[in-house]
Amino acid sequence: MTDPQSSEIAKSIWDATLSAVHRAIFLAAAALAFAAIAVPGASSSSNSTVRAKADHITTRLRYKNGPWVTKLSLKLNKYRLNAFRVCGVFNWPAGRRFTCLGAGSQLPRGTTVRLEQSPIEEAMKRADSPGWGMVGLAATPLVKVVLSNTETGNHTGTFYYRVSLRDVAGKILLTSNKVKLVWHK
Image: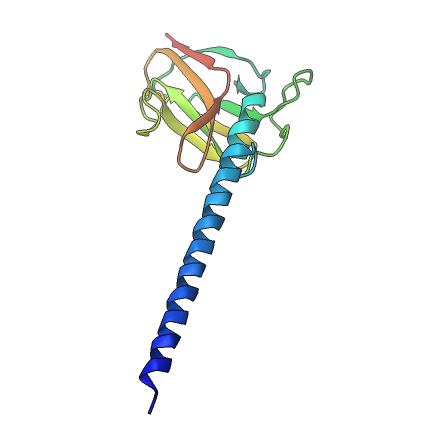
């Protein structure tokens, strides 16, 4: 049979130990939270946001085997697919000729690049990109997609493309230059 007094002592020791553990966990969590706010780059999300401010994304269009350009004008034939390419590269070197064969540097950890079209037409509508529809997605520094007149709804008019760098929550950290495609009669 256990002594009621020793049982009471053991319970008070257990309560004190549990309180000390809870305090230690709380203080450790508070210290980590403070470090993430006070020290830039101490957390991956903070690091991504800080890095994205100095980075850039280069976007270009290409028809058949032509050059990579920022503006493209094509004749619309509603009865035939007219394919073109859109390519975005994270941190493409500024002085280098654009080729869309490689990437400038790795994406910040926990981010993706999304290729988008405006007006949306047949692209995927996303709540986090009003006015823009998704036509491509990559977790690599390079995103390239072959598109045609079907994604633009077989309509004449002007369409814009951009690439956005996003965190895991879908928040835009950086957007590329806009490139312009014109379908004419």
